[in-house]
Image 1 (cartoon, rainbow, N blue to C red):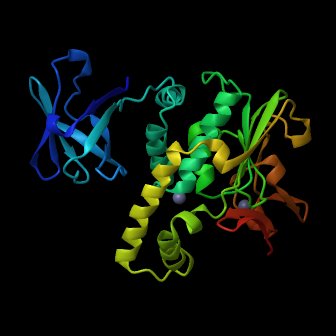
Image 2 (image 1 turned 90 degrees about the vertical axis):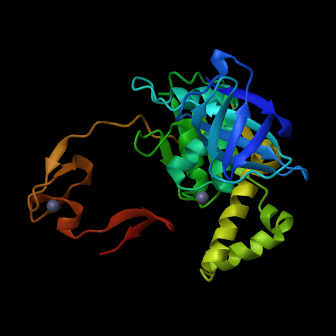
Image 3 (image 1 turned 60 degrees about the horizontal axis):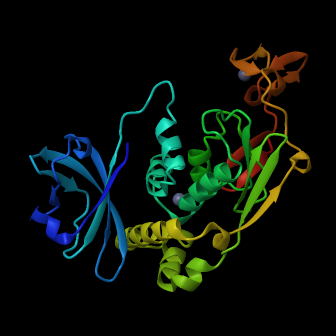
Length: 319
Ligand SMILES: [Zn+2]
Ligand SMILES: [Zn+2]
């Protein structure tokens, strides 16, 4: 499913900006098709890794042509993977599960980027934690019903976790506790739990002081120019990809427990009775109704307090 080979500079030539002609030995199995997406990772002479995408635009006897999203420097060592873009309807997570089995973090991060909207260090760490958790718990990726994730933040990290574990708000396998910690526990119900708590708090500040300054300006103070925003995005992506190869123990405090009773987990999602609001007539889950003057109403119609999950966490909004 994933094709991978290493090509040295002399094996490909630059034909025009952003187009690469990749020479391959004739081998039917390894030939991509026109339109196939290709993930290209390159290493330049100073050993910096860069990731870009390409699309196959032409197939010849012993080569194929791809158009890359970004220009690739001269004297670059290049590695590529053909990504399989056909999702299975019966098992939509098939591709993701294969990536997990093959420890293909690069492709998982690209998938997480589709959900999250960008590639950033925390989304990469979320992916890493999810993959490590599933592997450590020796979870069979085909049957995930008993897998739950307890997440302690609603930051970029949680999107990486949702993508890699398949536990989401929508399928009720994700429990959110508003502790404001970059931490998550991957759980096999009644059997085992493994908590990851991020410990490399100041690594960007210490290892990338320039980027840290830029981050403070662009994100925290919201004062960056368009150029600085772009610069930050690029640096952010680079730092994110560097996290791919870091050992997880360096980044997280990891605690494994052979039971789950201390976690006070809720039971599997119950199915609730349907009720109708007396005022707006919209359907509501029974536990979310309120009684006003003896009549069943929804939360907005009855003008009562409600809970909201947003950028500042979970909070009660007082009416
Ligand atoms: Zn992010
Ligand atoms: Zn209503």
